[in-house]
Image 1: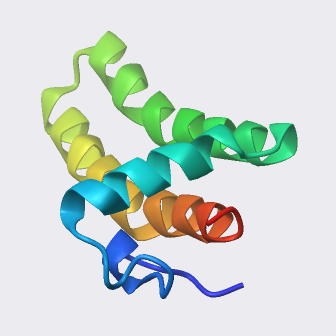
Image 2: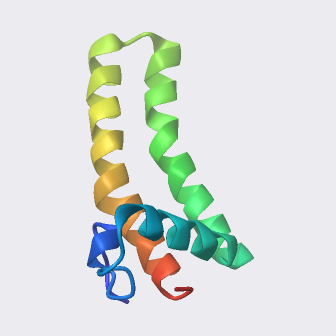
Length: 90
Protein backbone atom coordinates (compact mmCIF):
# COMPACT_ATOMS: atom_id res chain seq x y z
CA UNK A 1 0.00 0.00 0.00
CA UNK A 2 1.57 3.27 -1.10
CA UNK A 3 1.01 6.36 1.03
CA UNK A 4 0.20 9.69 -0.59
CA UNK A 5 0.58 13.06 1.13
CA UNK A 6 -1.60 14.90 -1.37
CA UNK A 7 -4.35 13.96 -3.79
CA UNK A 8 -2.09 15.36 -6.51
CA UNK A 9 0.35 12.47 -5.86
CA UNK A 10 -2.24 9.81 -6.75
CA UNK A 11 -1.57 8.71 -10.36
CA UNK A 12 -5.29 8.62 -11.26
CA UNK A 13 -5.68 12.26 -10.14
CA UNK A 14 -2.34 13.78 -11.11
CA UNK A 15 -3.59 15.30 -14.38
CA UNK A 16 -6.88 16.63 -12.97
CA UNK A 17 -7.57 20.17 -11.82
CA UNK A 18 -8.15 20.94 -8.16
CA UNK A 19 -11.94 20.96 -8.51
CA UNK A 20 -11.98 17.70 -10.48
CA UNK A 21 -9.71 16.05 -7.88
CA UNK A 22 -12.06 17.12 -5.09
CA UNK A 23 -15.08 15.72 -6.94
CA UNK A 24 -13.33 12.40 -7.59
CA UNK A 25 -12.14 12.16 -3.97
CA UNK A 26 -15.69 12.87 -2.77
CA UNK A 27 -17.07 10.11 -5.01
CA UNK A 28 -14.36 7.72 -3.79
CA UNK A 29 -15.26 8.54 -0.16
CA UNK A 30 -18.80 7.43 -0.88
CA UNK A 31 -17.46 4.04 -2.03
CA UNK A 32 -15.41 3.30 1.11
CA UNK A 33 -16.33 0.06 2.84
CA UNK A 34 -17.60 -0.01 6.41
CA UNK A 35 -14.31 -1.35 7.89
CA UNK A 36 -12.35 1.40 6.11
CA UNK A 37 -14.73 4.05 7.42
CA UNK A 38 -14.44 2.56 10.91
CA UNK A 39 -10.63 2.65 10.80
CA UNK A 40 -10.66 6.29 9.66
CA UNK A 41 -13.17 7.25 12.36
CA UNK A 42 -11.11 5.57 15.07
CA UNK A 43 -7.98 7.36 13.85
CA UNK A 44 -9.80 10.70 14.01
CA UNK A 45 -11.00 9.89 17.50
CA UNK A 46 -7.47 9.03 18.63
CA UNK A 47 -6.23 12.35 17.24
CA UNK A 48 -8.98 14.39 18.91
CA UNK A 49 -9.03 12.89 22.40
CA UNK A 50 -5.77 14.43 23.80
CA UNK A 51 -6.66 18.09 23.08
CA UNK A 52 -10.07 17.67 24.72
CA UNK A 53 -8.54 16.04 27.79
CA UNK A 54 -6.20 18.98 28.30
CA UNK A 55 -9.00 21.43 27.52
CA UNK A 56 -11.09 19.89 30.30
CA UNK A 57 -8.12 20.08 32.67
CA UNK A 58 -7.50 23.70 31.57
CA UNK A 59 -3.80 23.06 31.16
CA UNK A 60 -3.26 25.65 28.43
CA UNK A 61 0.40 25.08 27.57
CA UNK A 62 0.01 21.35 27.10
CA UNK A 63 -3.28 21.99 25.25
CA UNK A 64 -1.41 24.15 22.76
CA UNK A 65 1.26 21.48 22.33
CA UNK A 66 -1.35 18.75 21.77
CA UNK A 67 -3.24 20.92 19.27
CA UNK A 68 -0.07 21.42 17.25
CA UNK A 69 0.76 17.71 17.57
CA UNK A 70 -2.75 16.66 16.55
CA UNK A 71 -2.67 18.95 13.54
CA UNK A 72 0.72 17.59 12.48
CA UNK A 73 -0.47 14.02 13.05
CA UNK A 74 -3.54 14.70 10.91
CA UNK A 75 -1.41 15.67 7.93
CA UNK A 76 1.32 13.07 8.52
CA UNK A 77 -0.78 10.07 9.60
CA UNK A 78 -4.50 10.42 8.91
CA UNK A 79 -4.39 12.09 5.51
CA UNK A 80 -1.98 9.57 3.88
CA UNK A 81 -3.97 6.63 5.24
CA UNK A 82 -7.27 8.06 4.01
CA UNK A 83 -5.78 8.78 0.57
CA UNK A 84 -4.41 5.23 0.42
CA UNK A 85 -7.91 3.88 1.10
CA UNK A 86 -9.42 6.27 -1.46
CA UNK A 87 -6.91 5.41 -4.18
CA UNK A 88 -8.39 1.90 -4.39
CA UNK A 89 -11.79 3.36 -5.34
CA UNK A 90 -10.65 5.77 -8.05
